[in-house]
Each structure stands twice: as C-alpha cells, then as structure tokens.
Image 1 (cartoon, rainbow, N blue to C red):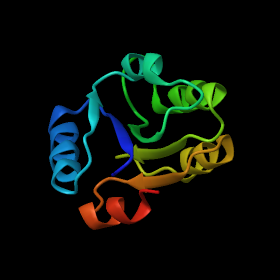
Image 2: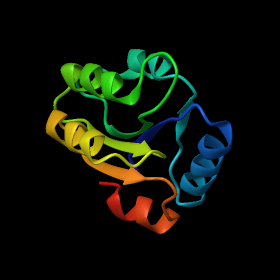
Image 3: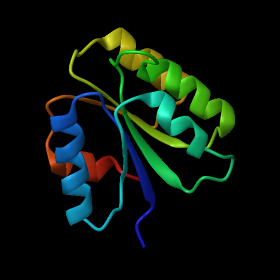
Image 4: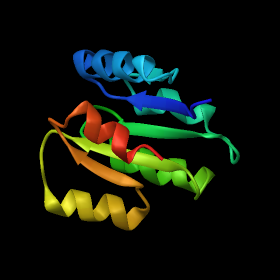
Length: 115
C-alpha cells in the first residue's frame, strides 16, 4: 500500500496533473488549493508525504512547512516552486524539508523523490 499524499498548490492545473499522475501510480492524494486547509489533517502520527508549493496566497509553503514540522518533525515534506531561488531552497532544507523541486519537473523525478 502506498503512503498517503497531501498535495497543496494554488494552481489548479498543476494540482490536477499531479493528482492524476499519483493516482496512476497507486496513490490516493488529498488535494488542497490553500495550505491552511491541510493543517487540521496533520497529527503527530500522520503516515504520509506532503507535496507543497512554496509561493501561494495566504499561508505560503515555508510557513506551512514550519507549522507542519511543529506538529511532527518526522513528516516528509517535498517543496515545489516555479520561481527557482537558491535562498528559498536552502531555507526550506534548513527548516527540515525532505526535498525541493523546481517547476517544471518530470513526473519521474517526483516519483523518484517520494519516500
């Protein structure tokens, strides 16, 4: 059985494409267009992976990462950005992100980094 996956991206076309690809691979992703919507699902023993965009209105991906890891330091959070910025990638990794992908990325690359 594949781990649970939470997808967070404010761009519906990206969210739908990622969800479709993960469905094909046997995952059942939970999709959110706002990071705030996903936080209530995260408990200290939530058994899954989170894939979150960084640049979003409202709560951005960095703030989401901080709050998610405050709930569980063991969460695997993969950060996505369409605006490649080395300083943001370094900050995300320093805060505890599992990995960081720059858009556009191949589906195979994403599947390779899923724990």
